[in-house]
Amino acid sequence: MTSIDGLRDEHRRIEAMLSALDAVAERLDRDEAAPAFVEELIEFFRLFADARHHAKEEQRLFPLLAGGDSSYGVIDALRHHHDLGRMLVGEMRQALTHLRAGDPAAARTFAASARSYTHLLRVHIDIEEHEVFAEAGRTLTATDERTLREAFEGLDTTPAALQQVARWERLAEQVRATSVSR
Ligand SMILES: [Fe+2]
Ligand SMILES: [Fe+2]
Image (cartoon, rainbow, N blue to C red; front, top):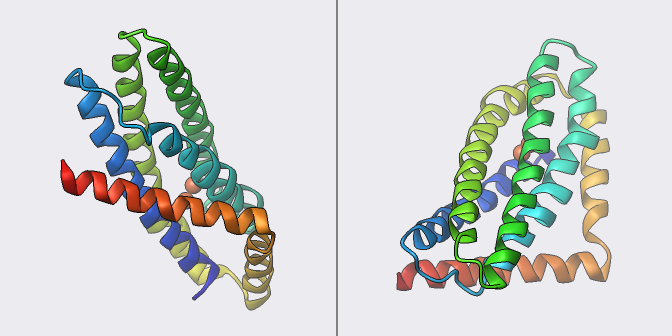
């Protein structure tokens, strides 16, 4: 599996969580209670999708491609998407705090930010896979691939990182079980 294949796999995991987030937004719009795992779901987007997956792209992959030139405009747009996503996750966290504190209006605020976020990330993932990853497959050298692989593998060697991965797998199970029972 190449590093780009690994990023594609992470997209599949992120998409599964985006569907879960859409389901939460629907529930909140119907004035139903937010499920208990919502905080963890938001932490998944903050820590897995952003601090980990987007950081791999911004710090490791994009610089290799931006040096090549033609995709630079697209990469600029993708970095902007990451910033917008960070802002929307911040909005969801804030709305959730207000919701848990008993402010019912925060449910709609959360749902609106959640919908903007899932739409943004789906468009973003589509552009990455069809434009940027496709180009990376054509232009990255064997040395680039080795550099990426070493950088990405280096993220999963500490006990804390492994524990975190196990936590996300548990969350994915929880989300799947909840969507089956809906
Ligand atoms: Fe990205
Ligand atoms: Fe991505």
